[in-house]
Image (cartoon, rainbow, N blue to C red):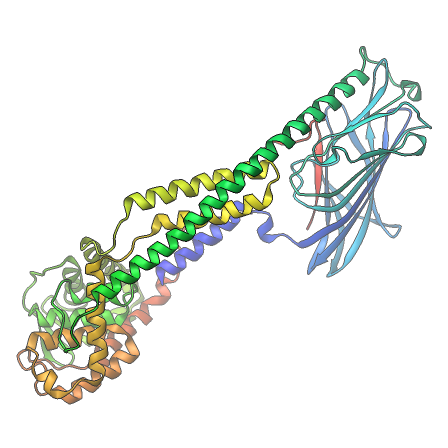
Amino acid sequence: MHKKKSTIALWFLLIFTLFPVQALAVEYSISNVTIDAQVNADGTVDVTENHTYAFEGEFNGITREIIPKDGTSIQQLSATENNQRLKVERQGDLYKIFRKGEDKTITIEIHYEIVNAVEKFEDGAQFYWAFFDDRNDSDYKQLTITVRPPASAKNVDFIGYNQAYKTASLQNGGTVRFDMGTVPAGSNGDIRIVFDSELFPGIAQQDGTIRSEITGEKERLETDAIAFSAKQHNSRITGNFFVAAASAFLIALFGWSWKQARQTKLQAKPNTAKFYVPKQKMSIPATLFFTTSSILTPAVTAAALMELVRKKNIEQLSEDTFKLLNRRTDYVHEEKLLELLFDKTGDGEIFETKDLENYTKNELNHSSYNDSISAWRQNVAEEVSQHNLHDKQVFLRSATGFIGIALFAASIYFGLYALFPLMIISIINGIFFIAFCFYSPITYEGHVIREEWKQLQKAMENLEQSQWDLLTQDEKMRAFSYLLGTEEKSANIKTQSFTNAYSDTAFANFGLFYNPVLLTGLFLAANAHTTASASGVDAITGGGGIAGGGGGSGAF
């Protein structure tokens, strides 16, 4: 339980670390954005934006981040919906527009002015702006930006970068429209338009020209696009081969590992149907840990107690009273269990079941009890680990890990060249290859242990008296202890029925008062008392477009 809670806490921590805003964000999508920029003769630009949001659930409004580039400023921002003015609150470059609602689609109109937005040169005047940049957290399903000159213009140059590249068209009167379509979050898309200088008589002229720079930028972007297309083509050819080979190898790897595991398991099956108790290769708690479940239940703790009786470390004086005989144990986990039962809850020599009940009812003892049980479980797991019952497959795990990392690196490369199908397949294959880093099949010896005890458990469901009588006292005790620890409910029914049938002869040499319901119930109650105390959780940029400035959209 403690481990489960810690795992849950870790996942929450990871989510809030990687997605701190999104974890609590309002659910919305932005279906359409239109931006109309009217360039004025004095160098200012009047901007009108329409943002259409579709909300799921409750919302309080939208946000618009507008980051001006150096030398410019944003003035007089206001927002309306159906000509009704909305409250706007400014926080630096972020504007919060208040409009409450639930499960609605709304369109908000935003007005503002950009001051000193135009740069005038000898051969033209430039409006170079980023209405959004890589700091934008929202997808735009449809984005259109229209830039209008102060008067009819003929000699107009324009260019768009990134998402705006090759999306512009010249309209009547020198208006330029950028039809960008879908714009993913985190994208850049600067726009750059040059009008005639004569349209801006009130702006001071800078030295130098601008149109030659625009021409050079167009040529550079075209060259880059051709080079990108060539690399994309070559990457697609290489990627198809690489991903196909990796996928084929992965399928072969799964087939080989399944076949190997199946063959090993079949070879390990006992070659006789005769009933017998397997030889002791590990302690009963460790055997249960390996053959049934790595979660050591109270039933396993009860079985561990009976193991100590079998080994004559303790003596059972009555149904609910045990006496310590010998502290010298074979395993560390047995020592830990003795310390818990006789030192913490008992008087050092005698342990009674009521001692554990009283001890765990006291909340001050919960932490100590949980620590002892955790230490006992850890030591049981360590005993199993020492027997090397899983094949480490060092070379295979190293190789698949390397291939997995290579696939993740390739997925990034494919993403850079917009080869998204190859990117997705590489990621999926990479996940499976990395998973093979943890591939540790059970060895032949491990399968032998599992199959032998599985056969014992099945045989005891319909065991005849004559077969039982052939067992030694030690074998009977080990068989009962194993069955007791297999599972609380079914085990108790089985072991109780065996106790009723064979109580006269089962444990004659041990002086044992065997009550599986009492023993398992004892540790179930102890765990129930301390679970509440164990349920607490352990404590476990710059950006911007080429032009400078930028921004994005959101909601709250």
